[in-house]
Image (cartoon, rainbow, N blue to C red; front, top):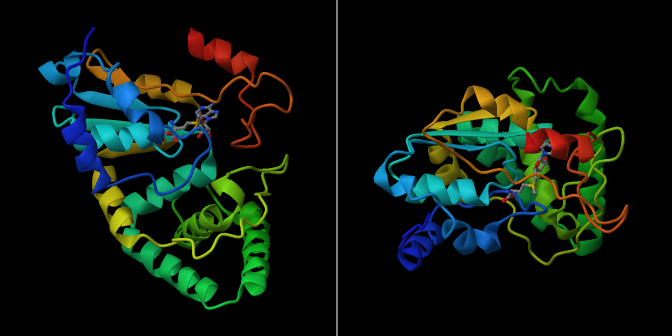
Length: 252
Ligand SMILES: C[S@@+](CC[C@H](N)C(=O)[O-])C[C@H]1O[C@@H](n2cnc3c(N)ncnc32)[C@H](O)[C@@H]1O
């Protein structure tokens, strides 16, 4: 099927509006144009009314579709990474409190010289990991706001914007040493929040998306890649690995 999207006009549009709020390994921000060229024609005819992205990650394609395909009315995003889904949920439900926490973290961080910034980063990382055992990821809690601010802070200041955890689920990416990183992009967070108002957000395995998907749904699957060797490729987004068994389940 051929898609006939007016790419140049639409990509200019997205640059001014909502974009991924976290850097994410495997993010598809640079591939939007190629992906849009593969879109089913039914998106334009209006036969497709729903969009599901069960491996949402940074959500580059979701943000494109949600802002450029007005025929699509309902959205579903999910991921197995509990910190990521918690962040999407807070941006949907309480973006102003998040902005206030994150702006404070940004101000405190930028007030320090570079060696103190490094120390501040490791203190935040330690605090973030210590609280892991007390967070209830399945039921909304007030402390989710602070946790979302912390994970966005860590994502913006860690090495390469990676999200990587050890076998206990602790975030273990080292300091990134960037000059003046943007930590709180309030306008973008508000734009993301507006899009998430029409979006169902779920924590869990991709298979749960079956409940949302029907004949009028466009589903974009972007699972972790199968590493070509034990060390050659990154796919540790959470303590649960996406192995061959999961690749086979997805194929079915
Ligand atoms: C390649 S990334 C997706 C990148 C995304 N398309 C973007 O543009 O940023 C794969 C995602 O799958 C998630 N994931 C891993 N195992 C999963 C599972 N069993 N079910 C749902 N999501 C899973 C990871 O947490 C990660 O966010």
